[in-house]
Image (tube, rainbow, N blue to C red; front, side, top):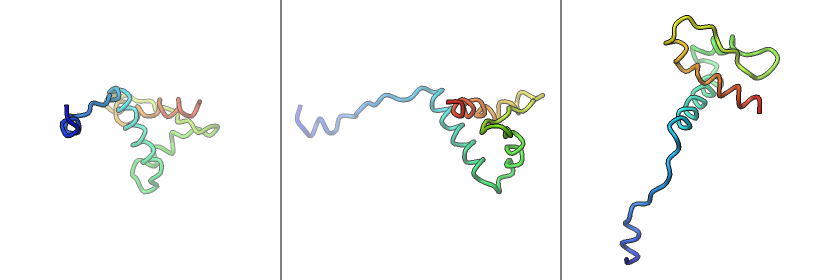
Length: 83
């Protein structure tokens, strides 16, 4: 194989697992919401903050749809805070 053919050959890189990508995106969304003071969800996030630590207290949810919104990022956020 010549050098030109080797350069044209597609390179394969391992991809991250779907769960890892999902957690990373959830954490990015949560951190952007926490940093943006003019975001409409800022009041809801402020209500979730613990007064003793940087952890977030998961809200009580009656509807499963609300629980499965961006709020699943609360669990990975708390795991990062406890490390």
